[in-house]
Each structure stands twice: as C-alpha cells, then as structure tokens.
Length: 279
Image 1 (cartoon, rainbow, N blue to C red):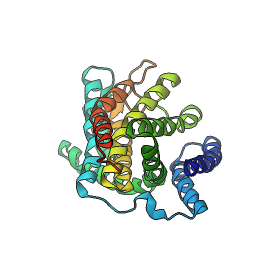
Image 2 (image 1 turned 180 degrees about the vertical axis):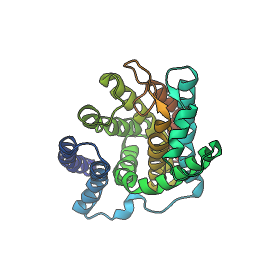
Image 3 (image 1 turned 90 degrees about the horizontal axis):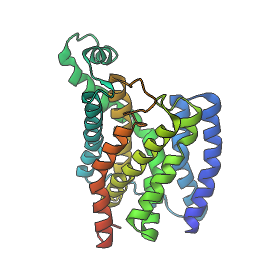
C-alpha cells in the first residue's frame, strides 16, 4: 500500500494547486483540463518515483465490445432519467423550442428541419467524445488505470470501488461550491446527488477496466458520459423552479437512474472477483 499512499500524497498536493487555480480563475474548459489531468499526472509521477513501468496502467486498447458498452451506457441512463423527469413535469425537456435551439447551435444549423435533430445529436456526440478523450484520460489514468487495480487486489471489488468513487466524488466538491460547476439548486442536495451518481458510476467503470484490462474503456465511458449529458441532454433541458435539481449531474432523478443502471455491474464485479475472474 506504500505505492497508493505515495499516489495520494502527490494527488493531494496537485489537487490543492489545481482546485485553487479553478476557484481563482473561474470554471472554464482550460481550467477543467488542468484539474482533470492532475489525477493522471499523480499516477505517472508515483510510478516514476518507484521506478515502475507505466505499462502497469493498462495502455492497450482492449476488446471492442467493452468500448461499445462504455459508449452505450450513458445514452441509456441519460435518456431514461431526462425522459422520465420531463414526462413527470419535473423539468422541461426536449420541447420543440429547446430542440430548435439545440439544432441551431449544432453543425447542421442550415438544415432547417426537425429531421436534423438526430443527425445533430450524432455529430455532437461523435465529435464531442473524440474531443473529450484527452481530459477523460487525464483522470482515468489515475482513478481506473492506477488506483482501481491496486485497491481491488488489496480490498476486493466492492470496497475498492466504493472508496475510489467516494474520493472521486468529494474531489469535485470545491468546484461545485466555489465555481460555476453546478445546476443552481440547493448546494447540499446537489453535492449529495452528485456523490451518489459518481459512486454508482464507479461500478461499471471499474468492471470495464478490470474485465478488459484497459484503462481506455474507462476513458471511453467518461468521455461519452460527459458529452452526452453535458453537450446533448443539458442544452435541451430547463430545470424546474424549485431548489431541488432533478437532472443534470447534480439531479436526484439522474442519480437514482444511474444507480439502477449501474447496479448489475456492481453485482458482476463482486461475483467475478470472488470467483477469481477479475485480475
């Protein structure tokens, strides 16, 4: 565990600098890139400190089926959560006006027809995932590439994934409280919803990483989640008037749906680890 402790020492030092920078400079794409990549940098510096090879992080691509799962899962839980919240009237989702605004801001803005919505979503999702890969990888080198395999070997799938998810979640709290990275609702409710979501997502992300042997599957998942939620669904959604946020990464409904969709992967991870089917 000395390797893990060294990682946390470097990670905390880098986080203090990057979190302070984001709070001082404001929430922007550049500052987000800076803070996300600090996790992977901590893992790389730890391995270099100990003279261990970077190949331990799981750099090979992995089987394609795991990447397809990583791309598809955010589409499933995102569509269900936002659709459910909109159907129940808790949020305004994908109305004709919101769809029009989304199309008008997309790559097919000149195609003035409702049939442009689906192609626009596909274009935004595909290009966005490619663009988001570097930032997602910056985190996943640390969380899933470095930390998940080591903690899983020491503590088992359930505890290791829970601890990783908890740390991953609270690491975001300064940004939620002191920058624009929130949905404008009750801060405590949004923080708890976000924490539940992140811990839940740690299940499928850890399972994909361990099952495929590749940190890239977790990066694919992370990038797909960020793009589909933040770049596709959020722009077509208006939050309700109350203080409680229902969707977005800070919403109660979203956290519940993510938890339900993630539960089978937690079960698989626990079961397969006990049977020796996970490394």
